[in-house]
Image (cartoon, rainbow, N blue to C red; front, side, top):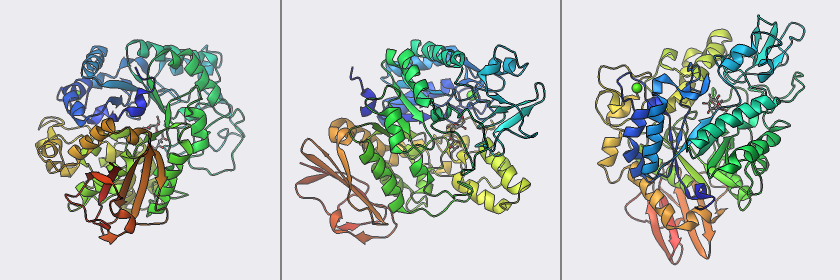
Length: 553
Ligand code: TEU
Ligand code: CA
């Protein structure tokens, strides 16, 4: 078995809550995922990343875990999980789980104990601090608005929560915490899972001094703390190194030099990381995603090309546009109008998948699902991040009007990625039966944007992604080739090459709805056109959202 099989793999991310309901309660579940394994296999992917399925009160849709070794009843039972794992493996699909150990739920028994008294054996499983002058210990902010500190009357101290109040941060300085986490990880790995995606894993080491911070506030968080590499080296030595698995760390706020430490070929920590720099190109310095800006293609190209060249030969990139936290890329960086949705979804897929790294396809991306525009009240949104931001920015501080915030939610809410998977044009899109209320409303365009229509259309985004997955297996240059950006200053096109063992691949893409001419868009000498989102090749003329991939013969 190739030690680094995950470098040649494509990952499909399933958000179980919104994927397929199998028991008519309007909530996706594990049996629903199992029923759809043939569809996932047909796409040509190798790995499924499941968002958290552990017992949870769902304050943050499963990212608040109350029991790491039990399945959330909404999703089924441990027997359902075992059946899913067995059937996935039988179909040649690996399963990677979501490891959420920066924090637990406040309903986890560790925290229930910890909050009882200052001398409870579990007190130091979490981060408790005395008030400073009657206030929170410092000005750290939660990602979900407000202070990152919650006062607890029982013992008169504050506890840290970088996310919701119901997600208290674990104290990784405590070896008992580390060993409890490592034991739980081994338990899952011994069941045969194939790896972990590690939630905000670069936040687990906090600076000891909780002195107020003067730096950029929102959300001021202690990323890449003083001991984070020690903790991950220990995790690798005690757990990860014992299994043939893949690991990807979710690491907000990292730059390539950080990534080389977390996921360098010679580091003994993780296999790759999710960086966020390209996800910030349309964010506001003060309000972040809640005041979205027009983005520049030159900026997006610069950032992603930097990651290609600075990790090349030293670490492995993850490649993503979408996940359960990000808006749909065809609406964000493409054009989701009926005229250009399919064309631009294919173009964006190719621009990402022909870079060096492991691609991650988020459920629905492969059929060009779009942001949801039929949510027009905050009541339509379920995501705690969106709802807290609305309360903070509209109701409490009048920073934004209702209409401004609804427009920002249309652009940026995580619920854009969390509306139910669109399987067909029946009521509820085949996600849950007619007459059952889904836990969140569907995107109104499911009558035209759905799997059934995609599978019936040879020109669909689905078959374009399927083709890219096939080409990846056929041409090692796609996996291993060196990346070079050719047009850094062009605001309409993105053109790059990959080179490997004497071969050269050239991709050129038009990010605009204009028909334009570029000399470098014509077929390079002695090449074949191996992929395009148009039926023919018009040389140096690039049509709206056209993408072409050439490979030397
Ligand atoms: O997300 C961490 C994180 O950085 C998010 O706050 C993200 O930056 C933001 O939502 C997008 O701009 C992880 C999980 O992916 C997310 O679903 C959880 O809510 C969060 O951690 C807490 O566990
Ligand atoms: Ca269900």
